Amino acid sequence: MIESQRLLLRAFREADRSFLVELLGDESVTALLLSGRPFEPAAAHGFIDAELRGPDEGGLGLGVLALKDTGRPVGFAGLIPCKVEPDELELGFALHSDVQGRGYGTEIGLAQARHALERLGRDRVLALAHPDNEASLAVLRKMGMTRTRQVTVPGRGPRLIFELTASRAES
Image 1: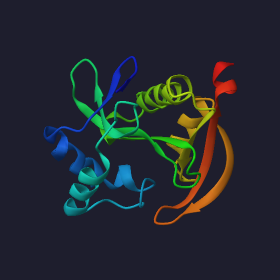
Image 2: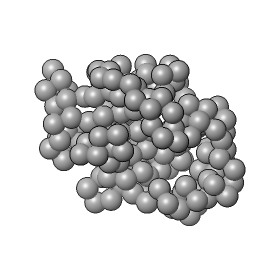
Image 3: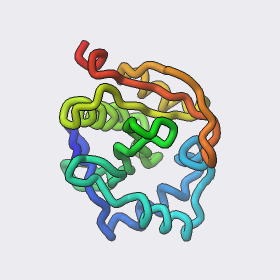
């Protein structure tokens, strides 16, 4: 489990399913995320069942992002093995459109980065963002992450890779 001042990244509960199906079906959320298009309900259920298992005891895996004070789910997030650089961890998050712009992305991003760098002892943590996803790019820059290069990820399209190193996080 990873937490921040206002947020808790926790394991999926069946009660979260309808919220997540709605989130994954929202074009304003998915346009520049994952495959770049909204999920049909069957595909959303498949994604939930296959991907939203964590975080595990070490804090790895995608989980549900919820408000600490009410428990209300607001998105999903997690630290996962990076498919572009398999020996590295990638942080990510997706927020429901009704809670975007409140600083939650920066908050959970920093909590995940601290977890990877401090608790897991990683030298760096990565994040991938679509070049047109201005909101995510702003969050990654606000977190102190540095753009390293651009890649094309099969099934996801172009992505900018950002990194935060342990030495940079300390400064």
